[in-house]
Image (cartoon, rainbow, N blue to C red):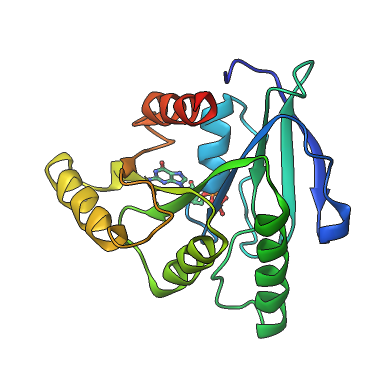
Length: 200
Ligand code: GDP
C-alpha cells in the first residue's frame, strides 16, 4: 500500500479549492510540532514529502499526496497543524472553518489519524479537535508520536491513559497506537491498521 513513490499533488487553503475525490482518503491531524511531517515521511518512506516544519503554525493548508500512477488507490492528506500559541484567533477560526468544511464534505475520507505527543498526552486543544471529529461523525484513531521519548516500561501506561481519555468518544476507534518516526517504532502496525480500514 505504501510502496512509493509518493508525490505532492495539491494544496488547499480554501474549501472551494479541494482536489476531486478519487478513491479513498485518509488524513493526519495534530498540534504543531507533534511530529506529523516526520510520521507521514516515515509511512511513505520519503524523506521530505511532508516538510518538517521549522516555523510551526505557518502552513495553514491541506496538503494532498498520491502515489504516481496510482491516483485512485489512496490519497494521504496532511492537515494544518493546530494549537500553536503564536497564531492569532483569526487564524484559528480560519483553521476550524477549513477543517470543518473539509470533514463535512469528504465522503471518501475513511479515517483521520489524530497524532498526540506521547510525552504530553491529550491536551485541551486536542480535545477540541476530537470533539469536532465526533460532531462531524468522522472516524478517527489516536496515534501517539515520539514514543521513543518514553522509557519502554512507561509506554503501556501512556497507551492505557490515552485509551481511557477517548473511551466515551463516539467516533474514536478504540485502539491507540504508539509510534516513533525516529526509531521506526509502530510504523508497520500503523501501516497495517490503515490497510485494514481501507479494506473495510
Ligand atoms: P510537525 O510540525 O507536526 O510536522 O512535526 P515535525 O515532524 O516537523 O517534528 C517536530 C519535531 O519533533 C522535530 O524537531 C522532530 O525532530 C521531532 N520528532 C519528530 N518525530 C520524532 C520522533 O519519533 N521522536 C522524537 N524523539 N522526536 C521526533
